[in-house]
Length: 349
Image 1 (tube, rainbow, N blue to C red):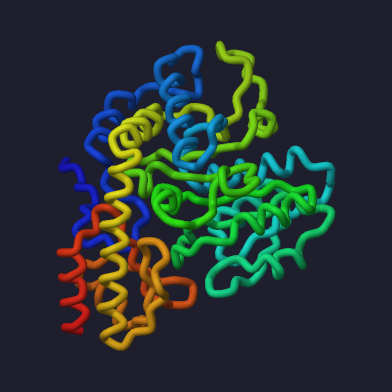
Image 2: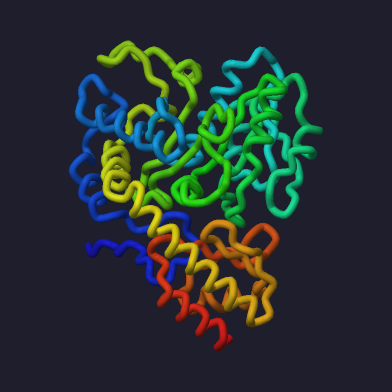
């Protein structure tokens, strides 16, 4: 039986994942059969996970981070809500987020029995005033998005952190995609900029690690301990992760990618990706399309649905925002040559 071939990236324009760095690919293969969920047995990958968390702390302005390598942003967001719920003194917890928050928060609310309240955005960013009207004594977490999945926009994190703490709630920042681009911008988004409590940041997105390699970081060990359960048959006595058995591939590849690229490699990649996003935005605007000005390397434009479907029929993997705009994510694998070909096909249509 002939094995199927994996998707190539030659015409993938809307994914927030990319081809892993060669060092990350090699590390993933070497650590594939190790299990960081059992650190007493798999000591080398457990040590690597500590290194991964430390490197993520460097990226996110946290000098003494705690956390772990998760399966992705969904798990990390669920765990952040779980931390907030577990530490709170309420039987009716709610989480307040902008409507731009990732759909994983809907999953978190459903799984954890937490009410999710969403406030409308202004210019695709969270509106602190609108969110404050939803906060009450039962609010356990206020969510900020640092690089939204539809538009790549960054919420006013310091203002939302203040809102959370005035209410006695935690502030969680979802930087799953944006976290490896934001260090090279002027945005205030991380632990060093505001009193952020928990953060999602995924090495397997702009960080160029192999899938699965998400990241959950917390400000203090006490917050991570809110997740701890006893593990009587393992050499370690407790576990804070959502999944038990985890492949060491994600851990090892995250370390390999960050050691190879942090920080100058990521800076160069951000500049190249941002240049590509601005180039594409200019070309689309010149052709009469209304374009959402890119803040990070993501372009949204009002191409018609039939046009988007035609592009897909030509092999381009493009998706739409909830409002129907075409959405292009300028990931590391997206080259200027790819974008020139894309625009040429757009002109043909």
